[in-house]
Figure 1 (spheres, helix red, strand yellow):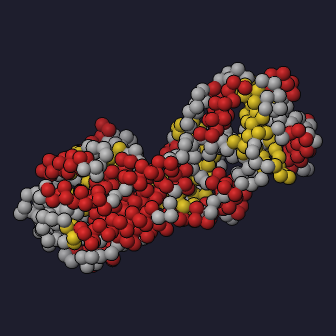
Figure 2 (cartoon, rainbow, N blue to C red):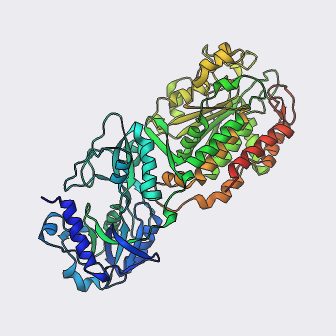
Length: 618
């Protein structure tokens, strides 16, 4: 017996070839020999401009190949009783409700005179990518089709077309994820890239076992769910507009149209090959970014890893911590930043010049990306940081004020109350916490500067916020440090104890998810801002961030460039600290100096080096 899939393809090929006027599709690309699968949406003429705009605004799930003129809808696809019986080619919708399934649209020839057909590309084959990656199919190759799910991710709304993104999922063995990403690039270019890797609840999908369309493909313990945008988004859009009469191709059944010449622009260059990186275990979440962007961020990580104070920080370095921290921050909606190391306990203020500049530079870039950004500082240092932010606004270092919080809680419940709305761990206020040169609690409960002096009386228990975040799904954290006694450095505490002077006493015991090590902590803040610029300017990552719906944000690159750290802004920021009598960490000097290193000739050169590496070849 001939398999149904072969019968269907044969019948459709015959139907299309027998009708030379089949290609009444508006498209500027030239036509070549061959056919490709597509789905169709047939709408009244008055809805056509809006639907075209809807497809263009949501190109990921609805890559539009073209549209017909009225009266030139589609070739007849009623190719025999077997096909009509097994897979009717069209569904009829009236006011958003499916009222019939049809083998052809022939009986509606009069109505079709005032309707327009849209052709949506279905040529990317997940199965082909799986085969190329050496991954076996889990679903049966019978008459059913792989499950698709309505998400809570809204598509860009155009006129009456308002609907959620629909996605399809395939379980991928963890050890074959990279191979799959390479295969999807090879098979489908940008259209083949997934839009989510990890926990389905991040898309609003409550139960993978209950797809809205098609059949569930079961996940095994070592599998990662990988999601692609589905053309069934167009069906949801059609339902939302409640047209008096409309048609679509039946879910799971494609029509075959003449194949366009492949556009080189649809393929990715070698540097744009997507890479997957884990950024969260609870919930499970991966991000993707181009190989070229990864390489640039690794260059930034190397730049800031020099050790001007000869502290031995090279032993604390873990590869790609900057990359993973930046990826996690890139996905965050709301970020809480903390800083403040009161190392000069005999002076007022006791703070040092390392920390606030890096924190404010990072906050400025997070704000430019549209992320809610707040700071939390010691109660006794609230007035100082308020002045720093106010002066940064006046000097143009910041464009938007940063809300400043304090925390003096005494319990996990207090920390959770700050982190979450009404203290409910299911509704966190922040997605990511960042500590930049923030005094970190040692194993004995005290806080120490590099000389083993206990400064606990000057430090509020902001560490508790990081500890509470470890138990709240959806909140990640980053610690930036240069000596091992900073908040977040608990992740590398064994290396601190072994290699850093006084490390057995001063090592911070509180870990962050990501530990960014820098020769001067400010440099880590600058590098995070630069890494975020690289990520959001990367088409591969930016498409993944917006789940291939809505307009690209890469056009905002110019405003992001202005938000990057600069020598002029960091000079102003350090001068603001000097005006507020904040001292250099090593020397105790009130001057243009950080950690005993002069701004001119050291810090200014590092800032320029980071920015040049970030913006080169753009």
